[in-house]
Length: 394
Ligand SMILES: C[S@@+](CC[C@H](N)C(=O)[O-])C[C@H]1O[C@@H](n2cnc3c(N)ncnc32)[C@H](O)[C@@H]1O
Image 1 (cartoon, protein in one colour):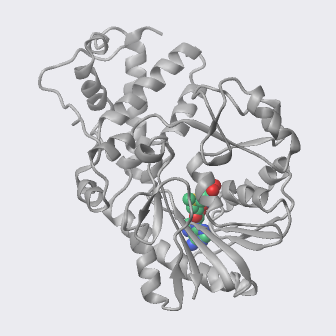
Image 2 (image 1 turned 30 degrees about the vertical axis):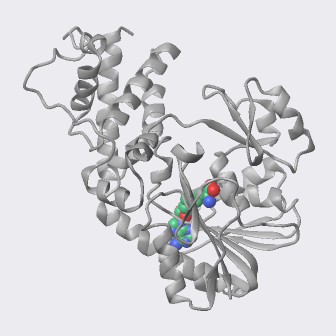
Image 3 (image 1 turned 60 degrees about the vertical axis):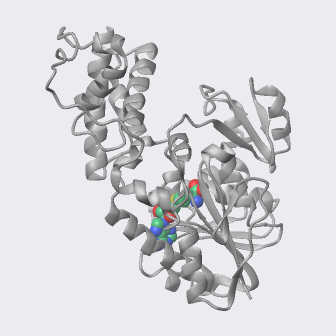
């Protein structure tokens, strides 16, 4: 493809990504993969170049742009060589015009700036949310051969304070490796590994992973428990939860059982677990502000109303989870968001509602105290952003 055709491809893709962000459609990565699947003529160099253009444009624009062209014009204004590809050639974008719409450059949508500042996140923290994320894996200790991976994966380096983590060059292709099929490792951010470890899961425990999704944290818990004890992994999303069983099989996890919940009736469906769990982990649905490095277009999706709905769900989920905890047991609350409304304020609200509970600050070798919990940020910890709090019945 010519450079001009690549620019036009980026414009088309950005149009789809903007529409999906406005209408709650698929994530940018999914849309890009679909687009290329329909265009086999695009070679690997074209794909890489187009993908980079698309993500550079997404990172540049804090507000959702009005069109893909407006986003690419903004990018072209910062790069003369890109501007030159707007040449009106066949398959290329029309020539630039002085008066045409240009998306505004910025980090955050305007409505979120105050909330970030109130959550103690200054300019440097915000900018770091848009940098490229590293590629981390978790060695699966349930498989003895996982030890050999540190030497076998080119460029793999250990990550301080995260015993099972390795960091790899970003372009490493992992899912086709035999070691992946054999379950020797999982792709998992080091921060996600740390906040899961904060729960202190041990062999023999009875654990509930209340918002298990596809089971990323369920598998981490099972490894920490040396496959001894039991884990009930629940979620309201059938498609996500259905991914857990094959992943568990690949990872050699035998102690996890899944249960699909109905929104609004979670407590009823879990009545047999009331007061029975040694540990309840709630990896709550959230705005995902801590993972914007991986999907920067997510900041075009978030709205005040959506954030409000999420905080209501989070508050309900902590109460549902607390009812499952046995006397002397622990509740761990996690969000991959940096906003206090979803982290520190949720825990403060819970402690207001439940005077017989106490927060115990998780002992992490990273992060900084925030409210009653600990917060990891991309700038400070070089991980995805997380808030984690540990709650025990007093
Ligand atoms: C952050 S994701 C979980 C990711 C997962 N723990 C992992 O490590 O891969 C949040 C999950 O909460 C689920 N969820 C949303 N509302 C829920 C509810 N009321 N009860 C249980 N799960 C819920 C979502 O479907 C989503 O899978």
